[in-house]
Image 1 (cartoon, rainbow, N blue to C red):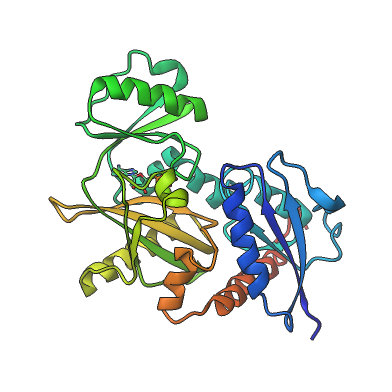
Image 2: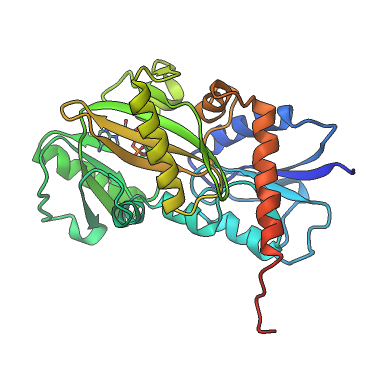
Length: 326
Ligand SMILES: Nc1ncnc2c1ncn2[C@@H]1O[C@H](COP(=O)(O)OP(=O)(O)O)[C@@H](O)[C@H]1O
Ligand SMILES: [Mg+2]
């Protein structure tokens, strides 16, 4: 059998550009060269496809590629925009499709979908840039203020009073037209990796113990002080409940391939809340998505084999779909 030709896309027009480069390096190093031929596509922070290589938005326009692995975190990569290009090109690609990618990126639409599916999310209020001036928030402090579409905790603040709230709203409004204000949860934070198409599987959950007030940008990428417990130190029942909710959230968003589902647990009540879904989670050798799988018995290179297989299966399934009347 000839090798599968994998196009690894990385970099990109995103605040998570540097993390993407690190994730891609790990993936490129781990792809088994007896099974895969690897072609790299680097996209600059300005969005330029470097080295003259580009995906062409035309069926049959990319004869050298069997499957695309978008290792792009955040905007213009994880949010459905790239996935739209892959759909136009009619090529298999790793990870969720256009709909799941864009709805998981929008924290406000995501919550609406979770609520409509009866899944637990923290109470929140939605504001728009024009309406923040006199906005009344009918939720108790502390509050979390977030731009609706971003990641890496950029533009997110925890606030304890009205004066801080006003500053935080202005800050979040720099990054998005739409802002989500949430009740702050005092308690613990968990993450759970999920993969698969029709029958998704959940890995061993981990706990994140931020070293700061919350898991902010510095804590995620600069300080190296946040502690990760894998497996999370919780009961077997709680582990099963996190896994169950992770799979339900994944399915409610129509995720395919892979995603990491993140949780908050309120100390006072023990209640679990689904915080967000990351459709292209960090993939460095020390990232939690592959580590949770390793703990569950799926080694890094096996994980790559599986998610590439899910991509090829989905593409094969699409072949049965007609787009015009017979
Ligand atoms: N409602 C909340 N209550 C308590 N902590 C929160 C809440 N929302 C977010 N956080 C904290 O802020 C971090 C970043 O928020 P998150 O919604 O995950 O945004 P991002 O997409 O930038 O990762 C979380 O990992 C958590 O530490
Ligand atoms: Mg997060």
